[in-house]
Structure formats: structure tokens, C-alpha cells
Length: 253
Figure 1 (tube, rainbow, N blue to C red):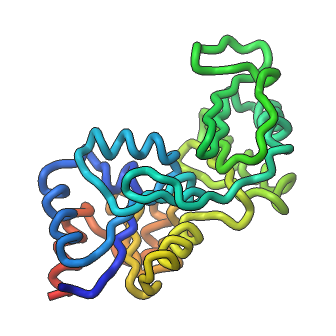
Figure 2 (cartoon, rainbow, N blue to C red; figure 1 turned 90 degrees about the vertical axis):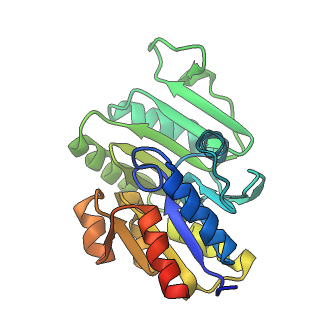
């Protein structure tokens, strides 16, 4: 049995890069057979990640969703979550709409609301902002802009106004807003405290800006298809998760 380590992989553009093929499934199975843990670390929520895992035919040991705010086991049972103040949810959504966003999602383990600005047509799964109920907390609010420049601009404006409460993260063209002290590195640290893995035995891999905190915090790799900023931070690149696992298992022998 090898030394227990944790491979923490982003999902979109990292684990799922052109799909989850048999090579990745085989590599993941061997990684776990050698006594290691595998976790998917994503800006997506846990229910959505569970749907994707079922579709992909894989079962991680753990899921860390909402950019580190929510931790679940491999069956999707939430182990812990860190919320933002619920009393600012409606105000925050209205502020995003005033800045030019035309949708927002608001979620925690017990709810998932898709919200539109007042006067916008709503699909059956959406509600106008005026119908958003009071929530006790939320783990993440997300939105997007039509251009990267607008995304960066609005992240700055949200940080300036709510920086004492919230952490807005860039996720490609999307903005994911979590509690001030939350990011993927924090989520991983909370997970390894539960399972007894040392920080030095965590390997993180990602492709986008919202992966930067975990890439800085742990021995890490950036995907070759990833953004340049992340590749500079990581200093090491890899073409695929299965290739990375083969390399790590070679070191573990």
C-alpha cells in the first residue's frame, strides 16, 4: 500500500477535458487502489457535481463545491458548508443587475434559485428578483458578463463594495461570489483536516483563475490548456489528469 495522498482536481477544463475517457477512469481507479484519495474541486454545486459524476461513471472520494464553500463525501452527503450572510443576498443580486449582469444564481445545500432582473422574461426555472425569498445564508452567488473586461471590472467593483464580507472569483467569463475567507485552498485544507492527509501530500491540478489559490497552496500542476497566469504560478504543466496520475504513481512505487 502506498503513502496516502490526495489528488485534488478541478472539473471543467481539467478532469473533464474532452470528456472522461477510459484512460482517466482506469488511472483514477488505480490511484485509489494504491491507498490514495481523489477529490473533485469545483465552482459547481454538489448536486450538479453528483449528476456529472454519475454521467461520467466515476466516483471521487470527496467533492468540494462552490469554490471551497461546500464539502461532501463521494455519495454527495454534505459534510460542512460556509455561507455568506443571507440578509445581503437580494441586495447583492440587485447590485450585480445594476452593473449590467442579466442573471444570477444563488445556492446553498438546501436551495438553488435562478434569478432575473425585474422586467426580464423568466424561464420556468427562473424567478424575478422581487420574488427571491429571504434566505438564512448562501454558499455562492454566480453571474456572468459578455466580455472578459466587463467580468474583471465587476469583480473589482464587488470587491470594493463588499470586500469585508465576500470574495468574488473569476471563473472564465463567470463570477463566483463566496464568503470572504473562502477559496479552493481553504476547502482543501478543511477536507484534509477531516481525513488526516498532510498538506505536503496534496497534489492540486487546475486550469483557470479560480484555481489559483489551491495552486499556490499545494504542490500543484496547471493544465497545458490553462490560462497563462495559472501556468506561471504552478511552474509545472500537464496535458491530462490521467497522465499526471501515471507520473505520480511512478513516484509512489
